[in-house]
Length: 84
Image (cartoon, one colour):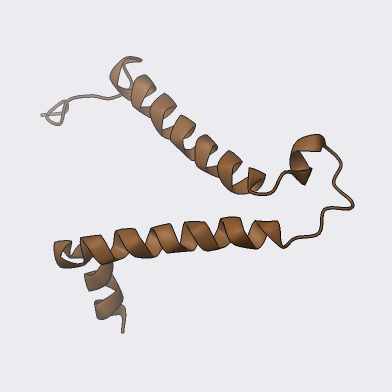
């Protein structure tokens, strides 16, 4: 069982299927967010359908760009043979 899961996520043969599956999951999350009642939302943006999915995606993208910037431009990343 675990071999099939690892093969699915690691094999290039399934790249297109993985991408379509992840897009489908993303669409289902946004659609499910339209079905949630919002009577007790504290802030204005909490009442917007799809806000949590958009906020989570934007946060992940921002985190990746900041970490890449710190690694490459901030001097945190070293060459592969740094300790040799």
